[in-house]
Image (tube, rainbow, N blue to C red; front, side):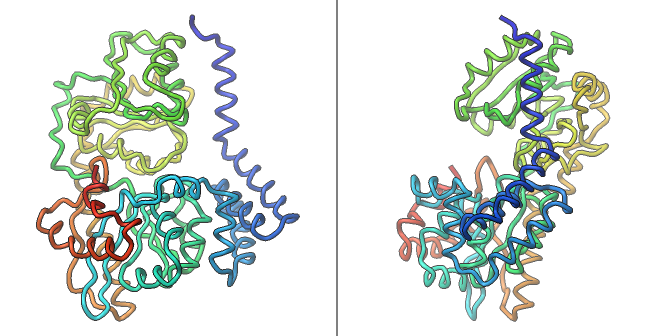
Length: 443
């Protein structure tokens, strides 16, 4: 049975309330007001939550000022208590305390030369900070620059507060979106932003784009089945597009949603195309399909960097996102790469992109601007200059790394060179740095 227009109207209303910048800012103001009548740990928790909800500088700046006043000179205990009230991370850490998705980009050297420890994502930084006592974190911070690649926008500000309280030399953050960069930079003097985005670590060599005329997939969506991916709006747009279009979905279970629930939703909305719904594919097969697609799109309104869009650029697809989306890779949409879709004209704009897509050159643009090699060089230059400013040596660079579909140290010789540093961390912190962390992070 097809869903009624009333259902879609209700879904749109709920969606607007969830994602509206005005509503989010209003809730943020209410939380900051409620914080006036609470005790300090709860007050800090409410203010960090309020800070994360407000995207407009005029709204978040006074909230940040209050938060800084409340936490000035505070130790880690205040931030730990605030995290218990405002963050889901303590529960995740308790369930699985060992690090994953964590790579060494540089081993420590002589005369105080620091290594570089890169954490994807917030839950791994939380594992580190919540597992080790202050003395061990001081030892680690003396030997490594600690880097967080953020998974979402907004990131977890209570976690970042804990990091600034525990790490003597602070923390580096590569944000999920450029829109959060100013807020992060102003959060604390010990928090420093790296150039680029956390999604920009794709290796171009894995992609062999087909000519536009040889691509057999009209529209590809690589997105898990979660509610925040908003398949319903894409399906609604498909009802106004030709039924002959070849449309492929690639995803995996998320929450209560499965391949079956997505198929049922498409049927109830009345999608006329014969959708190909594929689940949990190997990364090589995802790459093949991306290279065979004319358009690759997501319809989320808020998430992290969305690396699937970056991959699709290297695959030569035209990428499409909903106009106004708070997604990192939205920064990469331009006249060479794709288009933003107007919320009231999704079908019309998808059709227009299909018609002009042959004139785009997304793969060349991506290779020139956002490859893993460019991201690595920018990170290395920033960390090297910081080391020199602190009168610390920098005698060798970072190991080559890319994302596929997890962080991978790309060079076998560099992996071998890094092994002794991995071993040292495992011997010192065996329950946190597992013996197989290098391979575990990449799988």
